[in-house]
Length: 140
Ligand code: RB5
Image 1 (cartoon, protein in one colour):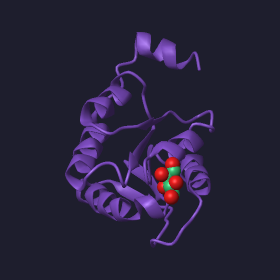
Image 2 (image 1 turned 180 degrees about the vertical axis):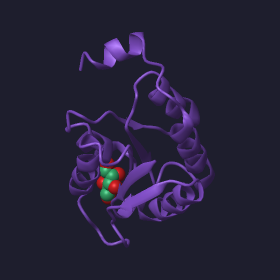
Image 3 (image 1 turned 90 degrees about the vertical axis):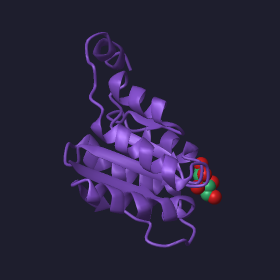
């Protein structure tokens, strides 16, 4: 898959790890930065990542800030985006099966590297179930 990735300074270290992981898994990564630990504004990164996902140029997006909260709020302002903030793997799986999440949000300061990797692995391979869930996501 082609995956758009972005982070603010609070998510920079984890973003670098997730870029490597996604490439190892055979995905094409488009990295929208940030490229170092200097302070940046996460709404701008969220908008940059969500644009190609909404346009269908990237199949998925991953966004990382300190907690994942602000960047998920910003991402969900785009009406084509279903961004899910996940702090454990069960929610990651459900966000795909039931919500067809097209953007995964993580907190660089809230999840450790092992858990974050597990969340991403699960989220990338889980399919949307459709059916009644499709009806529901069409309602918003
Ligand atoms: C930046 O300090 C921090 O506010 C940001 O990374 C994020 O946690 C916001 O929700």
